[in-house]
Structure formats: C-alpha cells, structure tokens
Image (cartoon, rainbow, N blue to C red):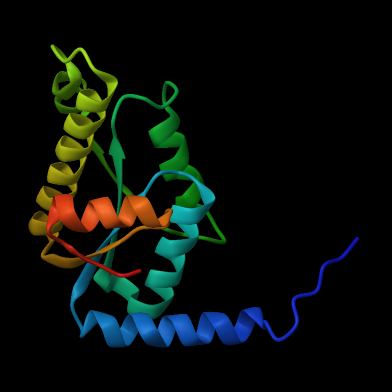
Length: 154
C-alpha cells in the first residue's frame, strides 16, 4: 500500500531546507547532536549537506546506552554511504552524578538535562560552534534553547 501526499516533493523540500540552513548559519559552525536515532542522524546529514565541514557531529555518551553502542553508532555512521564522522564525548560520570542524591524523578530529569546541555555547550565552545542542530521533537529543542544558550537550527 502506497501513500501519496499531494504537493509534497522530497527533493524540493531537501533543497529548500539546505538553502535555509546555509542562510541561517551565516557561515558559522554548527554542532550536530547525534543520538544514534533516525531523526538526529538525518538532521546531521542534512546540515552537513548544507554546511559541509562546518558541521561538528557529536554523540554524548551518557552511559544509558547498551555496552559499546556509542562506538557501534559512530562506526556505522562513518561507513559508506553516510561517511558521517562522529566524535564521542564520554560523560557517563558527570551525567550519573547529576541525578545522585535526588529523590524525585522530575528533579533527576532537570539535573540530567542541565548537565547534558552544559556538555553540549562545552563541546560547541571547544569547536567554535555557534549553532546546535537537533533532530528531535519541539519540547526538546525548546528546552535546549533555554538550557544551553546556543542558537538552534530548527
């Protein structure tokens, strides 16, 4: 069974979005936050198509993935045809310590988010990135904008 969306053309959409990213970035670098999922990978690939080497893909190893999964994600995405070179930041200790001593799940979530986006900010600063590319749902990028003080390309 095939579904048809009237008026939507993927190639036109991609062309428009890559042009939009080039314009938004103003020639500056962007950090692409990779989770290993489809959304963040597609966002990083689209950003790379638009910005080339000005995209710095990073996977934050929070310690919540399966054993060796960050390395498997990195290796898989580095292989043809994607050839997306990802840096892994192993911050397991910082992330796990962020939740210790907190009784309420909401407190842990807020501390995790704060620590996670602080790490993203540090990565962005390290590589001179002024923008953050995230393939995620709207509540996540809204929190990101507030927590990291990075410009988001959404």
